Amino acid sequence: MPLDAITYRVRPGCEDDLMEVFSPHNFTRVDSPVIKDDAGATVGMLLGTGLFVQGDTVIRVIHHDGVSAARVARHMSVQNGVHEAERAILPFLVEPRDTETPEGFRQHFHRSLMTALEQHSPDERPAAGTVALRHQLRKGAGAALALERGTVNRKASLLLSADHPTIVRTALFLHEDTLVRVVQYDGHPYDVVGYLTDRCFGQDADAWLEPYLEHPARPDHPDAYLALVHEQAMISVAHMSVLGVDY
Image 1 (cartoon, rainbow, N blue to C red):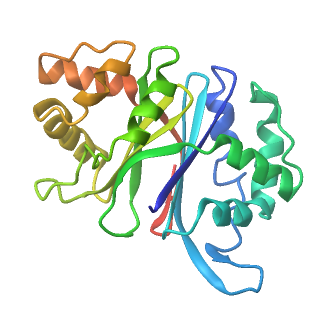
Image 2 (image 1 turned 60 degrees about the horizontal axis):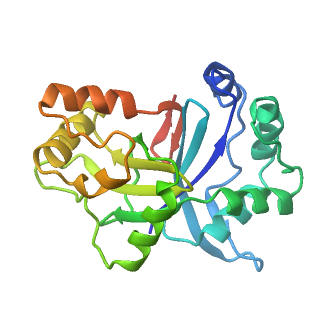
């Protein structure tokens, strides 16, 4: 699966601070997107990342060519820019973490790694942008959702469609009670809105999530659904792709 995600908690209201930390004039990008093993052989490629925040929740989405999460963590753990950013965001974290060393960063990465409940990505083409929508779960519902999803052989509920050719992949990530739907596109963000309205409102693609949601009532009109999407949308702090940088 070409997408992974990690999540952590921050103090609410620090969106502008995070944007400053990860702005182009402050954040140092990885020295190379090429991921290598201990012998120096190429084993994978980073294709893009996106950082999002809503309230006290941050997620980082990582797009790669299918290499393991452990390889991604190892690659990121030796990047100077990553450690500079870790030091800069320390005042905004709810729970301080020791990421000064590569080992400390890898431990944080694996503690924060989200479970991919589903992904639909027919290929590995880079995305021009990413949208992240946070679903509000009932308290404690994350454990039940993880159990149900882990014991049922279910295909992805939100599939790509020939009717929406600019949508390149979707994924659903869970960590404790944080549930985030990720949609990547190579057109315009409004394409995502049209796609979700068609698939989730028109065809009930995410109806199976309703028992776990804090507010499960289904919108009864497209405008009400659009208002819900606006409410769920996480703020994009930074987006980097092999296609370019978009902030």
